[in-house]
Length: 334
Image 1: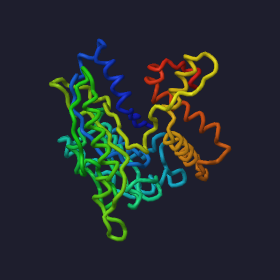
Image 2 (image 1 turned 45 degrees about the horizontal axis):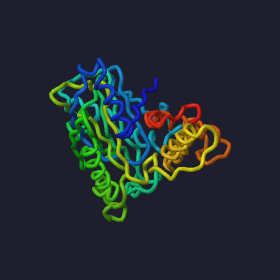
Image 3 (image 1 turned 30 degrees about the vertical axis):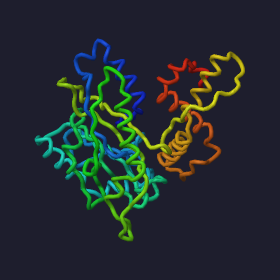
């Protein structure tokens, strides 16, 4: 069965949900008030995972975000074409060596397929297509990727984001997180202006790669002396301006119907529907077409209904906290 990679919230949603958890009855057991996070460069590509089950390292399952890829016929941006040629069992050996154990039940390797022809507007599009590992789960436990940064197969274009520039920050969730957010935005702007992952490579002409990065993914790696639940992937993302799926507040417009409800809905829509979310909707359509073995044509008007449904569902799922804060009824927001 397909095992999906958990979705990554933005910092605002992560903080809202995490602070709610802190005051819940369950929080005392595994939720640190002050937590340490490591930031890795967020690569603009398409999600891919490799799963090894039942201690068997000879039969990896190659997955996209939503389906198991069994052949080149239903591939996703060349994921199967790239990974099926690599000796993936050797990645398991590297991971087990770093873990200090010889056996396993399940190893889940999460990464990004990126490079030429996958996305646009970032430095790494100048690179030949590659897979970059950004998270690993061993027998149900997410690990500190920095301790596994050597787990890679560069000769097969399988890299590890932790081998490149990383960032660190401590966040105290007992009060305002504004100062931490400002610091993370500074780091994110640094990545957005000049991608440190891309600049570590040269293009086919031997020139150092330059250009924008998408942002940073921040993953919890420690707490204030309290053991956190590492069976949960505690992480969030901060993105550069042009990659954000939300927008800055806009001028209020005239409304019809109940003024309070209409105003709340319009504020929510203006906030939640940035251009990038629509681009993600097109990418979803292209992925579904690839999954079905159809020609990839994300802008096919015949898929408009599927596109609109995805955008609505994704918006409500990712921005529910803001919708509720504004007091916008879900039925009206939809």
